[in-house]
Image (cartoon, rainbow, N blue to C red; front, top):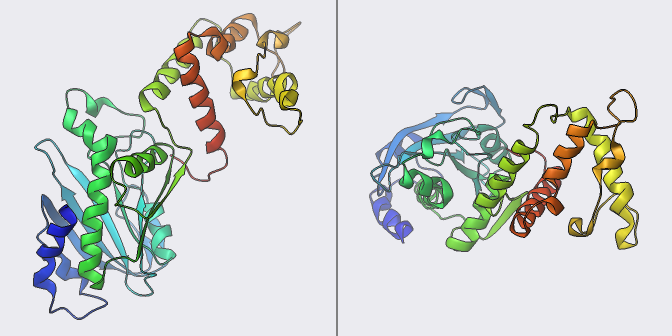
Length: 319
């Protein structure tokens, strides 16, 4: 494992007093396929390394690295280490959307609770809805899909060992949406990386999930079919009225959406259009987005999409 190689690379730091090594000394670490860009102590207060200032409650050692496991890889990683009161644990942090940036707010929250923490951009620099970097870059796709999160865990554990002269007693991964997918990939591919994961609102079955998104976008692309978010409560209310009680309990939750055969036509406007009704093109758009109007294979994609959307409402910050 790379972690064993990393520990051997840290042998030169053995003479540094325990808890903790001088933060700046981490700049000399020689780690496999890794370049240390920054190793600096950062006081509590505003941190301006990202796109917007982030307030950090505690002093910490910031280590920024670039890892290149392939010729086309460019994985940027931030590792933040509490200067005092480390709880002995490591927290890995994921990304929303198509990643492309580091979540400094999540890093600040983790070190404020005593965790050594690490986050990555997964190997590219772009907005969360921009996937143009992926075209003709299979290695970058691999980095985004699974490799960057694994590399982050291994490198972070090496840096933690160098700084505190002990390995973390527990390691956890905590993220949602695409970060939830990353968590599931870690559990499946690299189960030794973390002792536990929080996979919030996982965007699992990624290809199928995005296929559903394309289908939904096509459904509202016909003239007059798009509708404002202010109409969503009416659609939700009508669906609940039709299907909430199918499981024998009227509790505001549709237990099994696959058994719900709600017809949005009940919302067809009888007069002037309002937020409480849908025009004929809008009714058609909603019908197209429902699983009953798709081929059987697409039904499964749609159910996964709705499940993710439902879960994400209760998970706090989610990219």
